[in-house]
Each structure stands twice: as structure tokens, then as C-alpha cells.
Image (cartoon, rainbow, N blue to C red):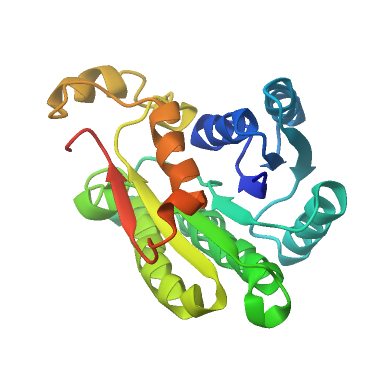
Length: 248
């Protein structure tokens, strides 16, 4: 059965891979972006070419009014919501805690944590059985950094993803009775723009061999797990975090 899924951060990386895979399943996808409309439209085209429906929707997920408008637009354009993928996220500047910039720290948490809260709130308001919805699923994007801590470079990012892990468990238990399953995926080293930082251009090549499987992962490998968690095949999975890290 075709579903309507909103994917935040859907113009690149894991979000884009998820949108494309949903398109191959014949689903309708809201492709959220904040800066690169061209990339978002490319993903829309790929979804449609694969047999799905799609619409690009611009919104900064940390902006409450913009988030509400995004959800309204998706439902007006594609139909009632069945699922949400909270994929929008940023790493922030590479730094140690002793040298952290407060404005950058706030921005990481605004996008990665507050954005996930705001989008999930709007999704629950629309999908909850008690609010007239028909149930659905939410999948959050965590990171293996939540377990490893990101010392020396990205403790701020790791902490934001640790918050996502807790958020997933709590919200998953809160809304399971209302027909909404909330889960997360925790990717490891994945070949995305986020892992190709100018400050550390060789990161994936350097760290890939240290992964037990001996390589970095691809966005499509994470997307497969996300689409499964959105589907009825995962009908008894709620409040869980699935690690996809090649054993790392």
C-alpha cells in the first residue's frame, strides 16, 4: 500500500537515498530541503521516475512556523501523512569542547534535536489515532557517534545524537498506543557529504579500514533499514535504535 512520507534533509545523503528507495516502492515523498532547491528537485525527479510521487518543500526544521507550514504543504500536495524520517542534521565545526563556539553549539542542537522534536510533534498531531489520524511511523537519524562520544572533534555532534537516542525511546513508548511506531537508525561511517569535510578530506579513507567489515557504508544501505522500519514488516518494532555500522 502506497504511503505518504516526509523526509527532512531529503535533498542529500541518507535522506535522498531514502526518498529514492521510497519512490521505487511507489510511495509519495515530501522532500525537505533548506538551501539547495536544485538537489531537492533532482530527488523529486528520481522518485517520480521510479514510479512514486514527490514534492520538494523548503523549511528550516528549527523554525516552528516553517515546520508547521511544511507539514501542511505536504498533506495538501500529497495527502494525509503516514510517516516521517527525521534526517536533517549538521555536524558543526570540528573542535574540542575547550574551544567550542556557543553559537555553533546552539545551531547543532537547534537542527539535530529541536528540529526532530518539532517535526515529530507535527507528525504525531496528524497521525495519532486519538487525534483522528490513521497511525504511522517515525524514523529518527542517530549516529554511532552517540556511543563513541566524538572526542577531540565532535563531542557536540555526538551529544546531539545521544539526545536523539533518548528521544526515540521516550517518544516511542509515549505514542505506541496511539498507532505510531517511533524508531531510529544509528549509522556508522557512511559515504555522504557530511563525512567529506574540507577540514578532514581523507577521513573515510583513513577510518574505513578500521571498521570490522573493512569498509565504509553507503547511504542506500542505511535507507534500506529506514524503509523497513517505516513499513508494516516492522509492525512490532517500537522505541528501538538499529545500529548500521559494519560492526563498528
